[in-house]
Image (cartoon, rainbow, N blue to C red; front, side, top):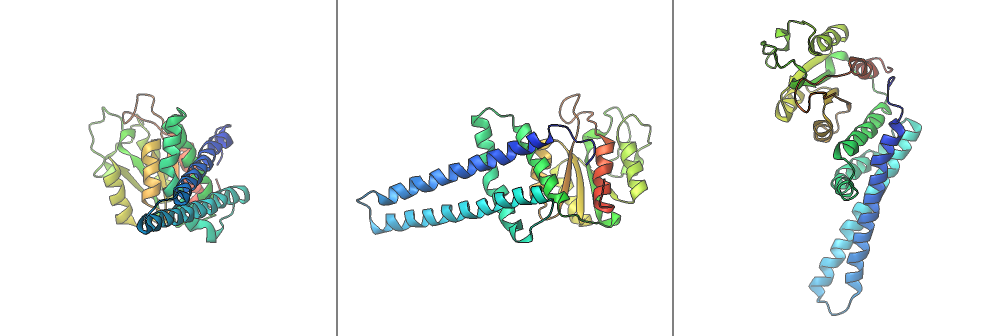
Length: 259
């Protein structure tokens, strides 16, 4: 998309690098279990348990390795490789907790890692080259975008917004009207999931902080999600802002195939 930061490739490399480091960690775990298998004086039951553990971990490592290769190939070619979609999903779900743990060990900010994951996810979604009917595209935004002094309740009905221009909601409504997409404003993950169940969208443009975007993207899989992180000049969950340009580019990517 236009307007992406110049260090975008560096951000992608952070998550992909930690994924590879997670793979090495899993391989070391497999080697450690195998070492235990080779040590003498074990009962048959103990050996069976250890062999089972080796088989499970080795299988997970192999599948995750295919998944990481699938991510790299998809990003490099900008084209989805269908047989590798399941391994990619396995790699993300299996290795993500290890990625965060490694990040904590190396004192890497969690939001940086999650932001990098969102960028990798967006690249994988772009590679699908989807064209979505606007009426099946959900634009999901957080309630914290609304100005905190606003007296009008818009989470129940976003049309209660008076479009005064003091926050980003009026611009989001303009995008909704311009492209005919569904606009949902959620106060949290529960309401966001309710919107997804209610509208059953073909694709989602989601605006949120790194934490909520990361969990949301994984929760609604396999629905493709383009994530746009919000700006938080006043701290989390309070009078946040969003680049309307980036949101519009994400919408255009889904309904026009370009941004």
